[in-house]
Length: 53
Image 1 (cartoon, one colour):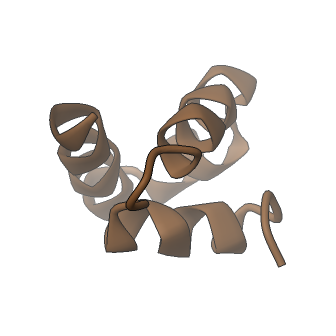
Image 2 (tube, helix red, strand yellow):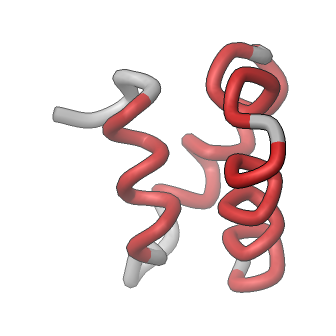
């Protein structure tokens, strides 16, 4: 999960629209955000894309 979280955060810094708008990326964000503890960068992404409140 940590590797996936780091990859998502890195990808978001390079191509935020790809990470935030693609359905497949949003699915991965949601899956990684369910991990405990949720990585901070992924929690931020989940909030940005509207997956959490």
